[in-house]
Amino acid sequence: MGKTLSEKILSLKAGREVKANEVVTVSPDFVLSHDNSAAIIQEFRQIGLKKVAAPEKIVIVLDHVVPAASEKHALNHKIIREFVEEQKLPHFFDIEAGVCHQVFCEQGFALPGLLITGSDSHTTTYGAFGAMAIGIGRTEMASIWATDEIWLRVPETIKFNLKGKLQPGVMSKDVILRLIGDLGAEGANYKAVEFAGEAVASLSMESRMVMTNMAAEMGAKNGYFEPDALCLEWLRGRARKEFEVIYSDPDANYEAIYEYDLSSLEPQVACPHSVDNVKKVNEVAGTSFNQALLGTCTNGRLEDLEMAVRILKGKRINRRIRMLVLPASRQVYLEALKRGWLEILAEAGAVILNPGCGPCLGAHMGVLAPGEVALSTANRNFKGRMGSRDSAIYLASPATVAASALEGQIVDPRSYL
Amino acid sequence: MKIIKGRVWILIDEQGRLIEDIDTDQIYHNAYLHITDISQMGQYALGNLKGYEDFPLKVGQGDIIIAGRNFGAGSSRQQAVDCFLALKIGAIIAPSFSPIYWRNAINSGLAVLRCHHLNDLVSNHRLESGDILEVNVHSGEAFNITKKIAFSIEPMSPVQLAIYLAGNLFAYGRQMVRQG
Image (cartoon, rainbow over all chains, first blue to last red):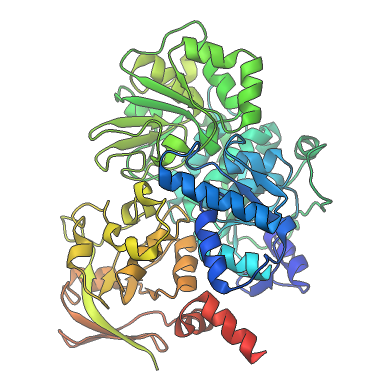
């Protein structure tokens, strides 16, 4: 019996052959943290060590509340900058860089075959490049900074075999929402999910990142695509270190295999207040909302902005809607600026925010009032996440969000393209 | 031998069912993520869970929380574990936990325990809020002292038990170092 990608990466790391359900102690290739580095530093200090074990592996990106929204946030940022200086950490990205997951990939840290841990649940994103990328907590991150090691249980794997081609106006966001709706919010708990099949070749790297990003929302430990020519091309000139491409063996053991035909998929929406409460857009068409959010680490990349531009160019969004655009990174922001897309979106009535997490987690910049409803391209719609505990969030693709902002109510975007 | 004993708090909805998928935003809202002092986090525990907004004021040291499946879904924010440590919660028992929450709790020394028949116990009133419960984390034997009903939970795994008995991941690490 062959091995899955996760079994192979952890076997290489552990220096012995391991299978699902074994526990290994391994050393990650890169470790990511963001504004929560302030709390990790506090824990690291308590351990009593003077120096982190492997400074070259630590990647810190300030993104959650940037620029600082309060004195306490500012203090946390200051503590992090001072620690970066003190420990001579080479991979630090300050408030101008963007959302950690996008920055991490753009900067060439997310590479095939690597083991990556991050103190953020959406660390799973890097599996788009064939890495094994796992979200962990603060204490574990402090422990890795101290020891350069972590214990992990080798996950079982669920495979999604995707075939067919998406219709125009249907995006990879719709695919992952459908999968989460079918499998449930804990459907892949502690497990790896592999996105495979002939349809993968037609998905851009950006589209794949949407799906691995949201693998976390079905409880997955990691989610991944096997690297192909498109992936390797994307990495050319970016890769920070040598890497070896790892694939699952053809006779690998999967806990379950699900087949999906993308050609018949309709646009989907995750309704309040859980990500697995997924319906077809047409089932909730006509639902009104107050705020549209286009962006975040899920859908704030160029192809997402381009989709909105195609729908909103020369038009004006509904006057009752506040639309926020949150590019995923400075690179995305600059490119969209050069292409004139930010101008088109601003002319359509959108507010362009600086890259960061801001409104997605209700931290600042666009917090919801009691009774308000948001339609967002983000990955999470937990009750009260974007502000008041009495507010609600619908999650959808950039196409659905843009078309709906135009109409002032949720609509199927396919007729707008 | 470690026995956890405490008063039970069952997180149920208006229909009396265990609340499932209690996510990290309901446990510890984003608005307080900038706080780094654990002792300040207890006051916000479950602050965003409907019907339990005043939980921190009512809960007592050593109390045991009973919740529905997939407890702790969502964010990796460890404040969602820390807030219960601040309140000195004795244990959280649920049919299942989200994976990151599970690891965070184990590494922080918060007792998290899985019990697959909680829904039956609660719907049949064999376990109710206010009952005094005793749990043997080694064997998985649980006993509702108030109602004199025994049931079983999943015992802690060896790694979990070792970290829990040491206090947390760091204390466990120090023990390992001492033992060479």
